[in-house]
Length: 429
Ligand code: FAD
Image 1 (tube, rainbow, N blue to C red):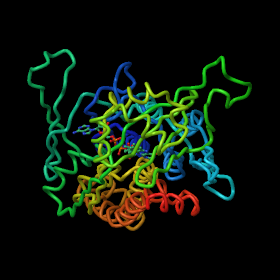
Image 2: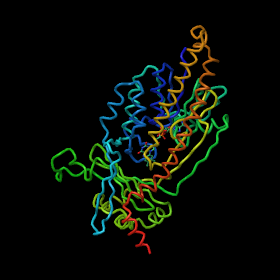
Image 3: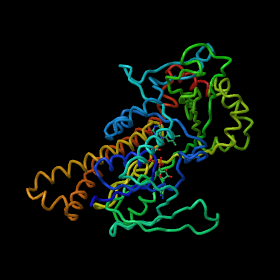
Image 4: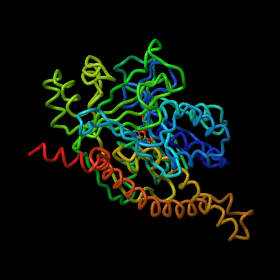
């Protein structure tokens, strides 16, 4: 009988892990705390609606090796290439300027993608996979990595609001925790493994805004006509200590994010009517793209959320548990690599599991008779693989975390020309 892999969290990383596991013949069960995001009216985690992310080679490569031919074609069909960043500022003559800075000398791009769209594609593929069972409204509440058992709270939509949720017990051979920054799997794994753990909240909050598509009546001809600014750039309004960014969407709109120190957010919360003037001072041109009324409405209604950066190591316990994605290394979004690195975790984890299973089969002449079916040998082989995964991956993930922190300075300040920064510096004196 095939071994059972239980995956906690059906975000982009957990869903991709389910696909990789199923391709290798495991029985896969995925437990997700929230309702199915494909159901109309389901609000995505932390966001008022789905947001756009930058998909780059790490994530693309992980999907390329998922063993499903349609996945990458379908996903890439709804992306928008961003060949560089567009820096918005005011020139020496006081006029608005836009400076395009290409990401790659050979013209390679990163891609704007709708997070929910990507997640939905993965779930659609899993739905059709006979090896995979998806359970929504199922929350992990406890796990015993010795006994390989876990406890799941089932939230039944039909039960009365204040009634106690039902709890079920499940078993597993391997649990993969892909349950995000506040991972319950990590919490329980840390009772079994000696995990070094550090987390940091940076002093910046983020809030979501939106640039609407250009109205039909104002459009000229051509595929870019629905966009108010270039669709092939990640737009940055650097503010030195803060910034505003915009990423294009298929429908002609842009998902925008304000990153601002908490003290300044608090001041604007007290006096929200100052927001348009704040934007005019620091993010020139934005109020021409987002009318002041909409700017205020978004600031008031959308949450002001913190940014966490966390590192831990090791990521596994013996052969029964491992954490991936944000559960293992949530990072600040300034390098655009959180989801990409999480997807890369999946590719690397399964390549190491594959390597160990092939090594053991070829080394052991009795493989056919015993090893393939011997649970103890399989368990030892997997424990070696997970130990290698933790050792290899934590070094890279810690480095990406650091780069993400450093890239905030690059995006909000260093992207500006030396002359501009000097002028700003002198203005402050
Ligand atoms: P999540 O997306 O957090 O998914 C975890 C899932 O687990 C959720 O569905 C949750 O409901 C479920 N869950 C949680 N607890 C339980 C439980 N107890 N039981 C069952 N299920 C549970 N990354 C990029 O690569 N590029 C970008 O451009 C980018 N931009 C970003 C911009 C912002 C403003 C932010 C905040 C993040 C950005 N990121 C970006 C990071 C990216 O969003 C995350 O790295 C990515 O979503 C992590 O995926 P995940 O599947 O590991 O975790």
